[in-house]
Length: 234
Image (cartoon, rainbow, N blue to C red; front, side, top):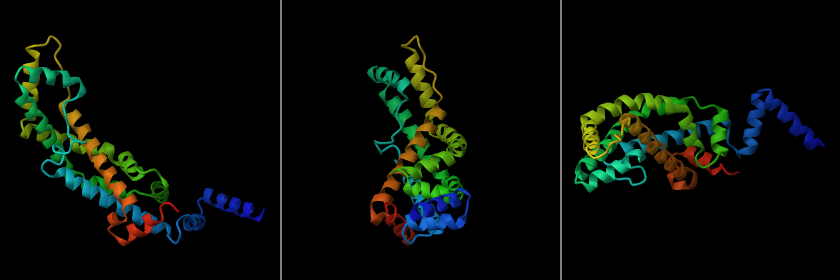
């Protein structure tokens, strides 16, 4: 009975926003960790994961040589691709695909401040939700907080990069060639497509980094990461 009363009292305090109750509950759930340590540790994990992911993808062939995230023709254009290859335009298609991936690599250089702003917004509730959440809770948090800003930032960078790498020209060549053989021309927003695929690849890579930190002690490169994630399943 006493135990039930104590739990009820703590629950009411928590609902009322009592910082003391939150601290007590945080200590019970996370060993000797304080709320500040959990927040700091999760922010550190996100920073490590995003920095590593952005750097890797921004390198030459960061997208193009990674089969898991390489940007290929849109589904609606795959029939176009097959037709063009069959009639000898394979090199034009290859140049278009290479250019799309180069644009994504170029855009990945510009994500640092956007992720940093999202990380700074993390609250105690966010941090405990990430710590106790699923294997991709941190990645999902970043998606929610940063996707609109990333789209805004990526779109002009990718558009410019597509122009610089002649992707727009290759894309036009692809569909001009295809339309010689088809009565149903394909009209696709190339910049919008590459922007979305670049974001998909970026968050895919961040998800991999999150798994390393959650599952591999060797990937916890700072003391606070070691302390926080050693307690994640307690």
